[in-house]
Length: 259
Image 1 (cartoon, helix red, strand yellow):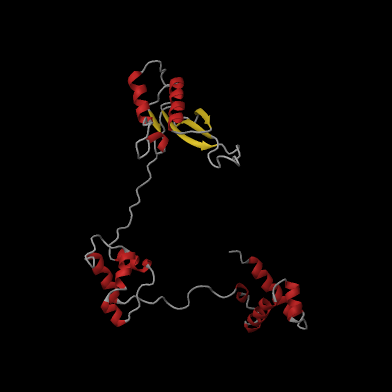
Image 2: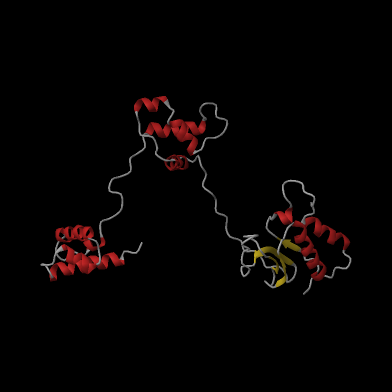
């Protein structure tokens, strides 16, 4: 939030009050460029502030003035008991949302009319504080060693942003580019352009690339259905792994990886 223009307008209003005490509030509002209600509010604040105090120009603090209401110990005890022994024969470990639901149904808490947690975040904090929810462990970063040149590829699809959408046809993925990048050198091995990259056309393009450049040691790709197959059986069930097995088993007509 940018407060500099607000502070500048308040300082200008403070100077005008000293330089032109005869001006009306409408004159001050027109000069500063603020509303009449804004000028009325800040005239009162500036006049009530001590002389020479510039802190008034920054406005009032926006933080909470009263402390957060404390959770009753009985409610905290109920939260831990529900976590340890799920209520109403619940056959799973209840989370904060489920615990909040069962707290509202607790007859003793209803009788005492205790203030229940207004959000699941309060319940989450109680569970975290008592060790019911483990903190995630941050694994140390381990850099990946760069492979040898032309031994490992990365393949991915990318939309051609220069091709506009067809107003009477495809709105997305109008033209896609299959990029094959060498991980060892970041060199683009091949780029195939297709208007309709589905499983069959994708594998056909990849087969041509393998025939031309040879098969590397490894190929990395995202879990795209065009490479790994869909969940249901289709008429075209060949996957990228199967294609690589075919080339690896045959080995005929394939040159070695280019260097």
